Image (cartoon, rainbow, N blue to C red):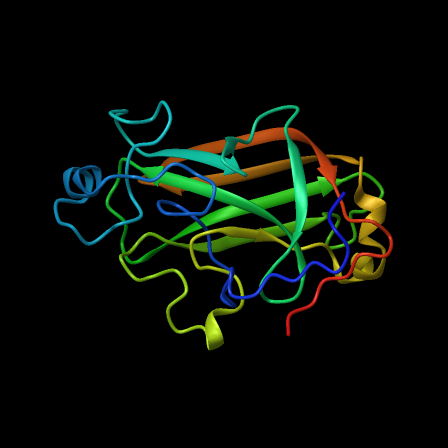
Amino acid sequence: MIAAMTRLVGLFAPALGVSLALSCGGPASSSSDSESESGEDQFCGLGGTGGSAGVEGPWLELYHGGAPVEDGVTLTLVCGGQGSWMFQLDPFVGGFVPEGDFVNLAVEMNVAEHNVADGHFFKRDAYPVLVGCEEPNDGLDGGGGVPKDIIAVLPPDELLGVVHTLDGQSGDVTVTLTVDDVTIERAAQVTLSGPGPDDECFVF
C-alpha cells in the first residue's frame, strides 16, 4: 500500500512523456549506442538495454520500477509531481533513426470493471516520448509534472476519488512502437498495487 499523504515534488514534469534512455528506474543507454544508431550524437534517448543491444532493426523494451514489464509483474500506483495518481512505465527504444526528438508510442491499459475511457482504462494512440538530448524536465514550471521521457498511465477521471479500489486488481498493458514499416509490441498481464482509502495525492 502507498503511504498516506504522498507528496512528491519535482519528480515529474507536465508534458506527458516517456522514458527511453535515462528514465528513472530503467537501465541507462550509452552515448556510443546513440552515436552508432543515429550516426550523430543527437538522440540521447537511444541505446542498448537488456537483451536488445546489437539487435538489427527497431526494438522496444518496457520497464516499471527498474524491472521488465512482463506477465505477473505488479504495477504500483504512485503520486506524480503533477498532483495526480499514475502508473509509471519506462520505455526504451533503439535500432532506428527518429525523425525528431520525440517518438510516438501506442499505449493501452485495461482493468476489468474499470474501463471507462472509450472502453479502456487508459488509451493513447500516439504518446510522445523524448529521445532527443533535451533534459526531460526542461521547460516545466518549477520542475513539477511528468517527465517527457516516461509513460504516465493516468486512471480515468471517474476513478480519481476511489483509486484504492484498484489495489489487487488484474489488468493488461500494451505498448507498441511502429517505425520503418515494422511494429513491435510489448504486452503483459499485470497486477495493480494501489493506495489506501485515506491516502491523498497532491503537490504544494
